[in-house]
Length: 347
Image 1 (cartoon, rainbow, N blue to C red):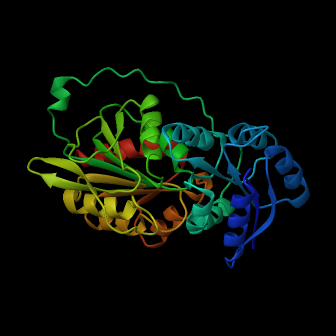
Image 2: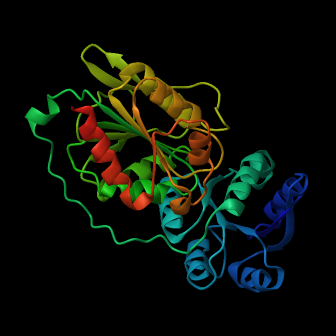
C-alpha cells in the first residue's frame, strides 16, 4: 500500500483528493496539510511514501518548499501546477529540483475528482522512483547561430527518435546536451501535459547544440533540428517525397498517454526502416516497448536505458524483456552510444 500526504491550501481540494485516492486499491492518504510548515511536521510524524504538493500556497510556495525538502530529506514528490505559461515554467523548475511528476491543476476545486485517476498513476510512478534529491546538473547555455542555408537545404536521410516518461525531462536534457549540432533530424516524446511541452522544448534548446522546438505539424526533419511532441497530440513521422516530415495526430490515448512513444516509434519504423536510431529512456509502464520492437524489426538500431541510471525502470525494462533493444546503455554514455550508432548507419 502506497501512503500519501496531500499538501494543498484548499480544504475542498484536500478532501476530494483524499476521497478519490482512498477509493483505489493500492493508495491510502494518511494525512494532509494546508501549507509547507504543517507538511514538514507531518512528514516527520507520518513518514509518507509520496507527497502531492500544490504550488500556490500561503506562508511558503510549493517550489521553495520542494527545494528545501529535496536538500534535507529527498523523497518522491508529485507537484500540481496551473496550466498557464507561468505554470509551465514552474513545472520545469520542479523537475530540476527533483519532482518525480508534475500534473496540471484543474480549473476549480470541483474538477479535481476528474483528475484523480491521472494523479493515482503519477503517485504509483513516484513510489517506484529513485529519489536522490535535486537534478540541477550544471549544463552551459548554448548560444546557437542560425543554421546555414547549405545545411538547411540538406535532407536528413536518417532519423533519431527518443522517448521517455517519469524522470525523462532531466535524462533528455543530459542526452541532448552532449550530442553534436549536426545530428540527423530528431523527434522527442516526453509524457507531459499540454502547454508544458513548449517550455520543455525551450529548456532543452537552451542547453543543446541542436535547435529544439515544440512540433506544430508539417515541419521537415532536417539535420540539427529536433521536435518535441506537444502535449495532447500524437507525433508521427511520414515520408514526403525525398524527405521526412513531422505530423500531429489526434486520437485516443495509448497507454494512458497522448503523446505516446509507441505511436511515434511505429511511424518511424514505417517511414525510415533501417535509417533510424531509436532510444527508450526512463519511465513507468510499457509505452515505447512495442514501438522500439517495430523499429528493430524494420532494421533500425535500438537502445534502452539501463536500470542503474533510470529514475523508473519500467519502459526500458519492458523493451528489453520483449527483445526490442539491440543494446542497453547507462545515461552517462547514452549520447556516445547514439553517435556511434548513427555513424554505423553511414557504412
